[in-house]
Amino acid sequence: MRPWTDHLPAGLSPEDVHLGAAGSLVAAWEQRWAADPSKVVLVDTTGAPRRADELEAATANAAGRFAAAGVGHGDRVAISAATSYEFVVAYIGLLRLGATALPMNTAYREPEIAHIARDAAITAAVVDDAERAEWIRAAAPTAIVTSPSLDQLPPSADVALPAPTGDDAALLVYTSGTTGAPKGALLSHRNLLVSSEAVALAWRWTAEDRLVLTLPLFHLHGLGVGLHGTLTTGATALLYPGFDPNTVFSAVDTGATMFFGVPTMWHRLVAAPGATALRGLRLGVSGSAPLPADLHAAIAAIAGAAPIERYGLTETVMLTSNPYDGERRGGSVGFPFPLVEVRLAADGEIEAKAPNVFGGYWQRPDANAESFVDGWFRTGDLGAEDGDGYLHIVGRKKELIITGGFNVYPREVEEAIALHPAVAEAAVVGAPDAEWGERVCAFVVLGDDVSDAELDEWCAARLAPYKRPRRYERVAALPRNALGKIVRGELTKRLT
Ligand code: AMP
Image 1 (cartoon, rainbow, N blue to C red):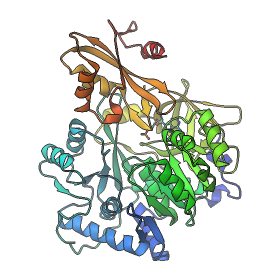
Image 2 (cartoon, rainbow, N blue to C red):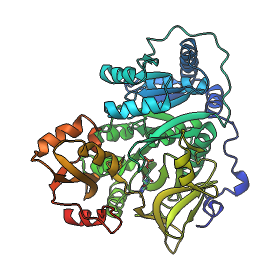
Image 3 (cartoon, rainbow, N blue to C red):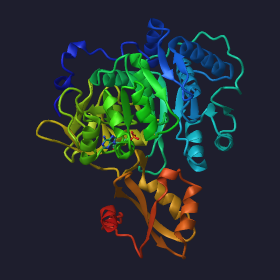
Image 4 (tube, protein in one colour):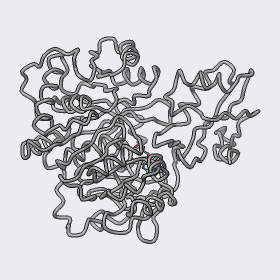
């Protein structure tokens, strides 16, 4: 693909692009807070405005409390909690201490939580639910477990806060692998800082912006793009515990300028009464899953401006985006962000090299060897470039199902179903769905008779709700190729 230098926003030249200069995320944010202490940087889920100086003091205190509890540099600390001001304070407190935060999807069930807590050998966990706290204690008996308000930690130790370097690990984010078990992507301060600055530059994000942040903070879309971008630019984020179209509309009516969502959210927004409120937005962004071209057009018609579709992965943060100034092309993910190099391998696989591409998976040399070729990260996505150089995602080498913006790897669901005594084998595919993008469907070969309700109950105990099949199809045998691999395309055809 053509280089990023060909796609800079109007008025900028490559020499103007100095990303990551502050070194670490927290150094960049501290500079912002010191420059404008009275700036409201967050609006709490309760509606309370939170100033920069308040956030600075609260996060220093949180860092001191984690330190007093024995958490230190490089320790992994899980956060399994709904979005709240306390979540953000605990998270930034960990970063200021040089610890590594491990955000966990709040929908995870016991086996998912236990795998991650053990794999990461967590030192501590911030949890807002008694049942999940129990699961974490069972998997990591030595871990310190506290609520998001940090009530269970001792008073702040008077520690001089270390200055994390760009190379320090800020985040360990578990992302499902084709092997079935999620693996941890280790992202450094530099990876995350560079990406948030590149995004800010490309989307002309300024301190005047007010972002409606309804995306969950356990995923990089909400955390690495939404929250980090806000703190890096000195803007304001309005925090919400979840998504609801009316919340978005009333936020825009009272001055919000930006909304970032997954296609499922956009689908609901344009269908809801009152959608013309979206005309008040300066910028709407879609990502995490393909935005159908007709939905892109529907958003443009109702909001008065086309949304920007962008593309990224947990392992790379943001890679490409439609242009802010030029044509925002439906069905395309645009051009590389500043400092990002993208190329297409012979089979069409998208490969990326950039300062925001992670260093590797946590303790997975096997996966790391497979994921990089000559310093280029292999995304597993298949792409094609159109005549104007726009990138289009045309498929997924890695059979990922994306439902409502959440990734589901068939193998993980298949393994859970196959454990049921009545099931001989199972294959899981995504069925196209206008609202969810895709829905999870399972083909099962049964040894004994079993009802859909029983299978669903079985999956409910083992998988987060979004991974559970919405449909079961009984088959005598699974279609397989000569090498014995399941022919998923064949199954998908049977669903339509
Ligand atoms: P995650 O690691 O959860 O961020 O998921 C990354 C995957 O989401 C990518 O490998 C893509 O398959 C998919 N993805 C992200 N953004 C887009 C997009 N705009 N269009 C199509 N697929 C996307």
